[in-house]
Amino acid sequence: MRKLFITLLAVGLLSIMGGQAQNRNSRHQLDLTTGVSCHFQSGESWISSSPVPVMSFAYTFYVFPHWGIFSSMSVAPLIREGNGDKLRRPYKNDHFVKDAYDFDDEMGLSMAFGIAYRLNKPVWDVQLRLGYYLVDAEEHSSHFYVKEKNSNVVRWINYDQSFSIEPGGLMSAIQTSAMLSRRIWRKLHFSVEAKYLFLPERATQTFEKRNLLTGEIEDSYSKRVRVHYLEMACGISWHL
Image 1 (cartoon, one colour):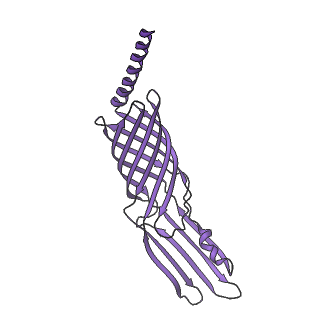
Image 2: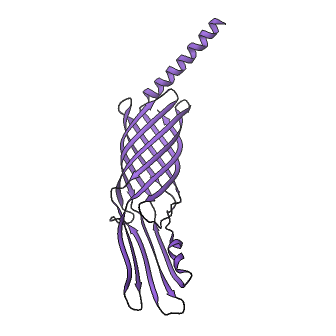
């Protein structure tokens, strides 16, 4: 019995040491994740805060045991919509609303590269990333006409939020992320990741209400707003 206990203990210790060595010696890491992207911004927003799906692929090469470089690519297959109904709701009681038009340019393809740091445990891995991010510039616009009931006065209402870069162009951002991975079979890990994107450039948000009978601009504003993105995802990682 004593020999059996010693044998089992030795096998257990060797397994732990083998797992540590395997994680420590892996130079390549491939991550395939899927999750959601959430939109936040300072001040009032008519853009939907509902999350949209996002899929990501990342490759990390560890130059040193704990430090490496990474590159990644993400795609959001659905459009993040503006909430045009919210903008038109205040007018619906005493106005006729017509010719409503909502335009939403999605955050589609994005790419990143930067540095990565990992902390290895026998079963668990923690990876931190800091990178330069290129993301599609979003634009959201909504305009419509309102006519007062029992009146001939017609007004044109326009809302717009955009960046200095044309829609579809790439703009710079800073990415920070943390990934927790658990080994489930040999070199295969299950991963959970949280990612935050900071855009140095503020978006420009404009509003205009124009009286079409007189041509007078009755109300307007233009302001800068800070836009943030938070992504939560899970998936599979290969440590090779």
